[in-house]
Length: 174
Image 1 (cartoon, rainbow, N blue to C red):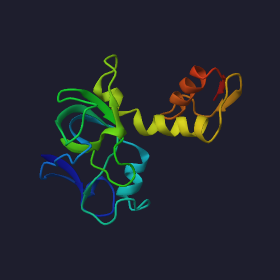
Image 2: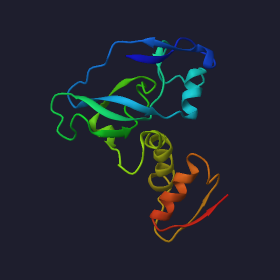
Image 3: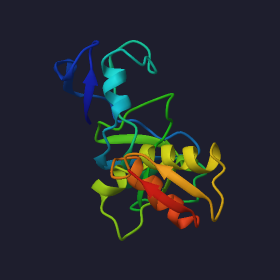
Image 4: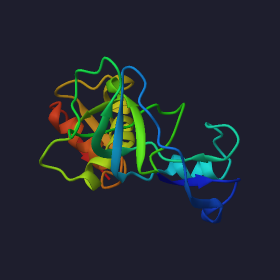
């Protein structure tokens, strides 16, 4: 498979397309043929050496994926080959979205809704999780509360607005 490899610390010039061995799913994992990958600020921070999550290069960046299941690991019953899925597998321990194939634990992906395409699905995981954690998990957002969301048209902000509205909050946004 082809993958975008980070070879050293720096800007985009340290990224190269290279042939890599196809990964194989372990028990409880699936192999996803990636159709779209999200790009997030954390990717640039890791590439630039400001957020050393993945150790020393070389490695493949990216966490948000959307694609089609190409193979199942032993014991997987939640999905079948050909299912469309999306998610953020193995964040932050392992990346690999900037590739043609990636493995994912079944608990870290979800069925892609038919109403959205792969490009839009790949843009959701990290931004959506960030919005959810800020509002619900850490913020304790309850129905009827008022919530101020700065940058409500941004990547995380527009999802925070939708989550807050869906939970019955009164939203004020900048």
